[in-house]
Length: 455
Ligand SMILES: *Cc1c(COP(=O)(O)O)cnc(C)c1O
Image (cartoon, rainbow, N blue to C red; front, side, top):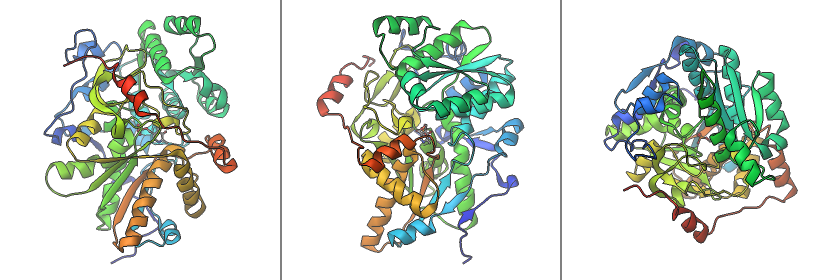
């Protein structure tokens, strides 16, 4: 058999031209979004004032298996795609494991993460609809960065509400966004009614993602020609991210490689869902079997300690209700350096797959995540994002198990981004001052007691 190269690159012609909608192959469809006032499934007319029209269709479609990727989006993708699938020869050697490890690297663009895959799609549909611009929130900053790049490409106005503490702690992310022409406002702000209300009640607050979502939604609803966009959790985002899994599978198929285990970090579930979709599709159709592992932070353990129930997607409780594994919309995860994984809920698609036994989940602590990140950076060269390093941790653990048992398993994991804007976190780790804050059972019970009553 041909030796597998360190990097498997696909040519531009081999890049997928359609996204795969895994919902079409699911027997148990993900539960519909509900209108919080009527508790009835949301109709397109109710979503359209908030989201772009074509994206509403994608959000609600459980049946269409393949969606064409518009040529304009394919053209943009070609700037940084197909992304490389890398055989982690050096990591395997360092671990002295018989396991074969592959990772799909999504950090090869200026925004530094997979979020650009959906940002460019969402900006495209907004432009196609003739909108002036979009509004959004950003916590850690990766989504805001990706969206500002995408908006500048299509010449759309981009308004980002950035959680205030992150706005102050990550000035460089903010400047990347501004360089791409986005207007970045620290949240809570005086520019929205909800922001003014929160500031009046809590003048010293450093903000939260839930609050920034509420401001961004209000900003979209009150300006003519604007819609709100979101970088994770939604079905449409997971759909766009299937480019990751489709490319990875094409590359592996080329060399006749079938992974035994597929691993990804899970925040709102978009990169994991995108990576695993083509593999899970085969499982759903009874064609193949894989072990799928979702990795989440022990500080925000939606899958492993949450409840599968209808809940609000935002702290402000204005967004639709979604049936998902949740810790409760009022759950405040402790400060964790993997900002992209600090969401109380999870994609409804992944939640249903997990409930149906197609996936496992595991929670890992921050310090062991940075140990894995450091080990990986030293041998593979890439400085990984803290979020991505959750997947590295789990991949290393599985490879070490293979070392004990002598099994030559093939492991594929998603390396979602680079960590250059997370050096404050690396500094804490290097200084030995990083701590792990894990919620107690009481805290989770209290938060879950406040779930909306739906059934
Ligand atoms: C946002 C982010 C994540 C988590 O988001 P998902 O929607 O769960 O994929 C993971 N890694 C990076 C680098 C991110 O920016």
